[in-house]
Amino acid sequence: MNFSSSLIEKAVESFSTLPGIGKKSALRMVLHLIKQDPEQVQKFAHNLVNLRMNIKACQVCHNLSDAELCQICLDSSRNRMIICLVESIRDVMAIEETGQFSGVYHVIGGILSPIDGVGPEQLNIDSLLERVQKNQVKEVIMAINPTIEGETTIFYLSKRLQKFGIKVSTLARGVAFGSELEYADEITLARSIQTRMPYNAVE
Amino acid sequence: MNFSSSLIEKAVESFSTLPGIGKKSALRMVLHLIKQDPEQVQKFAHNLVNLRMNIKACQVCHNLSDAELCQICLDSSRNRMIICLVESIRDVMAIEETGQFSGVYHVIGGILSPIDGVGPEQLNIDSLLERVQKNQVKEVIMAINPTIEGETTIFYLSKRLQKFGIKVSTLARGVAFGSELEYADEITLARSIQTRMPYNAVE
Image (cartoon, rainbow over all chains, first blue to last red; front, side):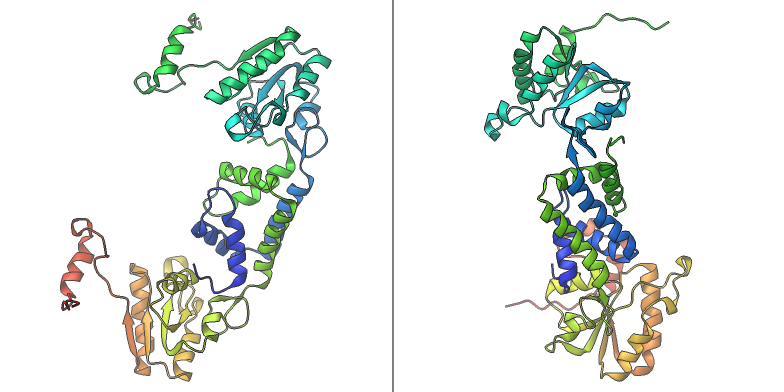
């Protein structure tokens, strides 16, 4: 595209480095910013730089945080004996959104994938084992995506956690609420029959 | 969404002010930026602020520009006697992309729309009339979107330009290349029969 302005060109180039943004969307954003108050654009820029310079990984759970410890690890009302193991901070947000979990997290930062060069040493596993050993952890919930690599990671971690004699659980698998059986994939449907649950009618 | 970090929250809020970006896409961008080099994020921020602070409207054609005059108005090889009238700088880019126009532009900055409070005084019309009068302009091409407001704007401008005795043209209307007749709308199809063109076989 011919922008006839190097200022516009540079800003469009910057925006197009973002995931899912092409040149046309980038231009739309740039033309939007040009119409905003200068102070607002400066605030925008400040927020980005401030984020990059000051964001930290929580020293306990590796969640992204403003300080040395994240708000969840600092919250004294949370149960430190139950650790929910997740791949990334997006999963922390998704689970927090449900409001159904009052334990703490451990972000391992990925899943085992030899093809992408991700082995156990690339993940935050040592710090997990240390946490389990030092604190009186009773249960580790593996909230990891049920893909082939995810299942491998769960299997590997459960072996490493075996020696501590703690409870290891995974998220329940089955047919999603509101979905239709005929469109569920075969593996999910087959497993949900094998692992069927007793029905308790709520009175 | 619970971001458990005010740094992330502020950056997500900033990105969600952009057109077409919701909280989830904004978060995706923020997590992407966190992984980048600090210098790259600083450059990103600098490009945005620099754009907003230094972008100008070309004093002749109102195109966005780095300097007082835009690159197109400065280019001595362009024919100043043919002015292409467009609504916004996006249209300048679209026409420049075709490489088929060697005249100059005039960005009027919108179209007449009484319902949105846009009258002739809100548009760059006086500067157009001045340009036509001062320079030896021979033709004004109305490259305005063929909507009802667009047609009204073309009609109004052609009346204002009448006294200068210059040629006023609009973009050709008709069935688009590569489209199928059965899906063309009735008005376009009807007009393209009325304004049919002699066929010159290219030998």
